[in-house]
Amino acid sequence: MARDAGPKSARPGAECGDEKCPFHGSVRVRGRLLVGRVASAKMANTVVVERELLKRVPKYERYARSRRRVSAHCPPCLQVKVGDLVRIGECRPLAKTVHHVVIERVRPGVD
Image (cartoon, rainbow, N blue to C red):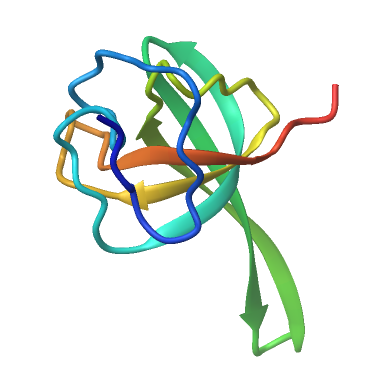
Protein backbone atom coordinates (compact mmCIF):
# COMPACT_ATOMS: atom_id res chain seq x y z
CA MET A 1 0.00 0.00 0.00
CA ALA A 2 1.45 3.35 -1.04
CA ARG A 3 1.56 6.11 1.50
CA ASP A 4 2.08 9.84 1.36
CA ALA A 5 5.73 10.90 1.52
CA GLY A 6 5.22 14.54 2.37
CA PRO A 7 3.76 17.75 1.04
CA LYS A 8 3.51 18.30 -2.72
CA SER A 9 4.61 14.79 -3.63
CA ALA A 10 2.84 12.73 -6.26
CA ARG A 11 2.64 9.00 -5.67
CA PRO A 12 4.52 6.90 -8.23
CA GLY A 13 2.50 4.63 -10.49
CA ALA A 14 4.91 1.70 -10.24
CA GLU A 15 5.27 -0.61 -7.24
CA CYS A 16 8.60 -1.50 -5.69
CA GLY A 17 9.77 -3.75 -2.90
CA ASP A 18 12.41 -1.35 -1.63
CA GLU A 19 12.51 -1.09 2.17
CA LYS A 20 14.04 2.41 1.93
CA CYS A 21 11.28 3.77 -0.34
CA PRO A 22 9.22 6.57 1.27
CA PHE A 23 6.06 5.29 -0.49
CA HIS A 24 6.38 1.49 -0.21
CA GLY A 25 8.93 1.04 2.59
CA SER A 26 9.44 2.15 6.16
CA VAL A 27 11.34 5.43 5.66
CA ARG A 28 9.65 8.57 6.98
CA VAL A 29 10.44 11.94 5.44
CA ARG A 30 11.10 14.62 8.04
CA GLY A 31 13.00 17.86 8.08
CA ARG A 32 13.83 19.92 5.02
CA LEU A 33 12.70 19.46 1.44
CA LEU A 34 15.27 20.45 -1.20
CA VAL A 35 15.14 20.79 -4.98
CA GLY A 36 18.17 20.09 -7.16
CA ARG A 37 19.46 18.60 -10.38
CA VAL A 38 20.71 15.00 -10.58
CA ALA A 39 24.46 15.19 -11.26
CA SER A 40 25.31 11.48 -11.06
CA ALA A 41 23.40 8.21 -11.02
CA LYS A 42 26.29 5.72 -11.09
CA MET A 43 25.66 4.17 -7.67
CA ALA A 44 23.08 1.46 -7.04
CA ASN A 45 19.78 3.09 -5.94
CA THR A 46 21.64 6.31 -5.03
CA VAL A 47 21.93 9.60 -6.89
CA VAL A 48 23.99 12.73 -6.31
CA VAL A 49 21.83 15.87 -6.33
CA GLU A 50 23.55 19.18 -6.99
CA ARG A 51 22.13 22.52 -5.79
CA GLU A 52 23.26 25.94 -7.07
CA LEU A 53 23.49 28.67 -4.41
CA LEU A 54 24.24 32.40 -4.52
CA LYS A 55 26.29 33.73 -1.61
CA ARG A 56 26.71 37.44 -1.01
CA VAL A 57 30.30 38.69 -0.66
CA PRO A 58 30.02 41.95 1.33
CA LYS A 59 33.58 43.12 0.62
CA TYR A 60 33.03 43.24 -3.14
CA GLU A 61 29.27 43.91 -2.99
CA ARG A 62 28.64 41.04 -5.38
CA TYR A 63 27.35 37.48 -5.35
CA ALA A 64 29.44 34.35 -5.70
CA ARG A 65 27.97 31.18 -7.13
CA SER A 66 28.58 27.95 -5.20
CA ARG A 67 27.38 24.36 -5.36
CA ARG A 68 26.37 21.75 -2.81
CA ARG A 69 26.21 18.07 -3.62
CA VAL A 70 23.93 15.78 -1.60
CA SER A 71 23.73 11.98 -1.84
CA ALA A 72 20.15 10.73 -1.86
CA HIS A 73 18.53 7.30 -2.04
CA CYS A 74 16.51 6.84 -5.24
CA PRO A 75 13.81 4.14 -5.06
CA PRO A 76 13.34 1.98 -8.17
CA CYS A 77 9.69 3.07 -8.54
CA LEU A 78 10.92 6.55 -9.57
CA GLN A 79 12.73 6.47 -12.90
CA VAL A 80 15.27 9.25 -12.36
CA LYS A 81 18.06 10.04 -14.85
CA VAL A 82 21.00 12.44 -14.90
CA GLY A 83 19.83 16.00 -15.55
CA ASP A 84 16.37 15.61 -13.99
CA LEU A 85 15.15 18.18 -11.49
CA VAL A 86 14.13 16.28 -8.34
CA ARG A 87 12.70 17.03 -4.90
CA ILE A 88 14.50 15.28 -2.03
CA GLY A 89 13.51 15.05 1.61
CA GLU A 90 15.54 14.62 4.75
CA CYS A 91 15.19 11.28 6.56
CA ARG A 92 17.06 9.04 8.97
CA PRO A 93 20.59 7.96 7.97
CA LEU A 94 20.31 5.28 5.27
CA ALA A 95 24.05 4.82 4.70
CA LYS A 96 27.31 6.49 5.68
CA THR A 97 26.75 9.51 3.43
CA VAL A 98 23.04 9.16 2.55
CA HIS A 99 20.57 11.12 4.70
CA HIS A 100 18.04 12.12 2.03
CA VAL A 101 15.57 10.28 -0.20
CA VAL A 102 14.16 11.26 -3.61
CA ILE A 103 10.45 12.04 -3.30
CA GLU A 104 9.52 13.05 -6.85
CA ARG A 105 10.82 14.12 -10.23
CA VAL A 106 9.81 17.77 -10.65
CA ARG A 107 10.91 18.15 -14.27
CA PRO A 108 12.67 15.80 -16.70
CA GLY A 109 16.15 16.81 -17.82
CA VAL A 110 16.93 18.33 -21.17
CA ASP A 111 19.06 15.94 -23.23
